[in-house]
Image (cartoon, rainbow, N blue to C red; front, side, top):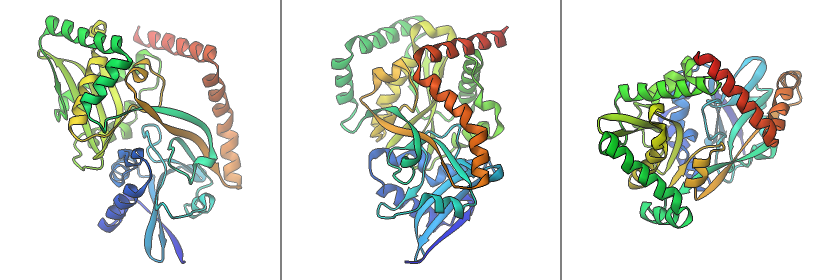
Length: 362
């Protein structure tokens, strides 16, 4: 069979390509493959904010069999699409297609390709991963009532505590209501302000200080495409917003992305109350998999019913450019791996970051 790889910007893809991408994504194994971060429409949204966005279109005898989105940096170094904010990465490939990943990189003029949230279904790239992580999820296929019963039997005190906090909050400020899929730009601005303050307070880099990320989130907040649309959920107590979350959804998968809350009301655990209402609303809207995303957090463990796998790593070709990338990046990556594997070191790093955050607030 004759194969050909053509590199384009996502905005240059034809309607036929978009439809074919959708069809190939639907063929991928496992419910997580329907992730909105893997959709053509997320690629087009990133392309609207970053001119280095590319897609390699692989054709066999003229028929598209794979789409590989990526960012192309200096010296032929590539990264996963939207790396830094994308929570599910990889290529959309026909299940019967066999590709050589290094030949794919060569066709893209890439010396290396880095990823940190590679989907577990990505058999093309998983062999090149250097780390595996879990992303907690909730299976909502049986519906919210079934999930709530599971939660009650597995963690009765957690659910009981959240409901008690909700009643306390209602008595203090007024009835608790969730505004699901809120399109109010002022509500989004409130959430982003809360989240930026949280990043600064904990010593982390604020992603919204990067214009492309801020623009991407605001663009996706107006998206209505069924395979990749932004969903803003705002929890009110009386007339006051107390917690909010902005995430992405496809027809069947909801991805948590940016949650935050009014710090003045932290004693009421508004974030936990928000997630309970969000999970119920997601189930009612047809979501089958609710993905919290990679990262350790006690609340994720309390809510989850299982997990999916994501990976990090770098695929490199045998080129001088790849060697340069290794020399520049590998020492820092190795240090990160050491910190992650030693709880004591990780705690020390987090304490230091918090101290830096406290200094910022002075």
